Figure 1 (cartoon, rainbow, N blue to C red):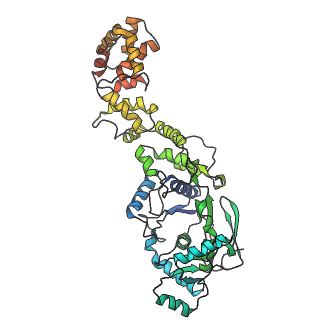
Figure 2 (cartoon, rainbow, N blue to C red):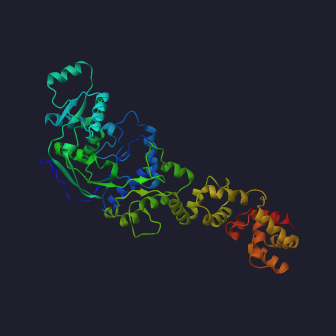
Figure 3 (cartoon, rainbow, N blue to C red):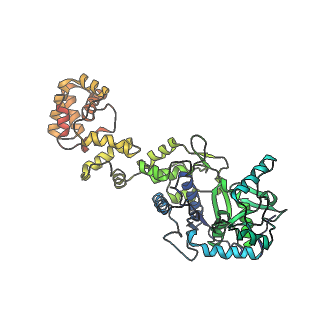
Length: 478
């Protein structure tokens, strides 16, 4: 059993510290966003702190523009961090590319303790070894080729111009045990792990190392991350024990799968938060859907982040993969739209509404269409109907107008001339002249004014139509 080294600082009881640590190699996809959300909620429910760390040691794939986009998308979702980029504190910097000196000190500490050694194996040699182990029915792991090289042998390889990686010397015959916040007791035999790389040949810290060291040095107490990292945990616990650093508690949440059952990932083109934002999805809709993916809760309504934090419980995180369902997201989107204030709705539809639209018709339009739209694109057609010219008629609308006859519309025009855009007055004039009521009274009006047999509530829609156009649209059929 792995017991923390006696020199490791003990975790003191107190508010939790969690983190989200993306690599700037692509936009934030929904699986990333869910991980960030769960960590923020875990911190908030205990009155703790949520950190954001940028893991940009992969200089080949990391891009500054992705870093900026990730920060922007997290802020748009409302996932604000207490410390991180733009909010530095004494635990920073929060970009791994700026923490090289810290890593070097810990590499030196491991080297002084004999816990690491240089490895000169080429990628080709490692691949040949891996295939040979698989062919013999053994799980692939580093064969220890360079583990016992003498100083002279190491010097000879360096003289050949070979830049070594640095491998952690995994102690044999031990069992690493830990309690996973989601999956309960876990254990792994060190003999099954194999010596692993902690520093790459280019001198950059490897994930196993920098991720674990930063968690410890930043005071992180709990980490929720994807189950694909579960196999990393024993390695990281070994590193932290060797350095005398206190590890966080790890919890590995189920992966988020797409409709085909494949894990959402940047590499495989999963739709990003930015993609959904561009379509007009609201942050609250996305968050409410993610909150319930792999996390059971008795709360059924649309929740804000504070309400989610109160309802969040790591014990309710499931172990089975969670499936992202866009139809469910659209359901939450409809609910989120229903909760918009008039000002929020107008901002949401600002790219759809006509420029310079006055407050009164804008408010009337929003009142009419919001119950019928999920995305701004749904409102675009109604903007054309309401604020454009006389609408073209669909087949059903043509039928209602033909059946109503010119006398119906002559009465409608008189009502519009007397009352403007007042639906009740127009309908009253028609009722008096024709005796119509119910659908027979209102359907021809809808058809003439909107060109459609179905749509938003007619009374507020009429209030949004520019003055005079109601009469003009009705007069076409009188």
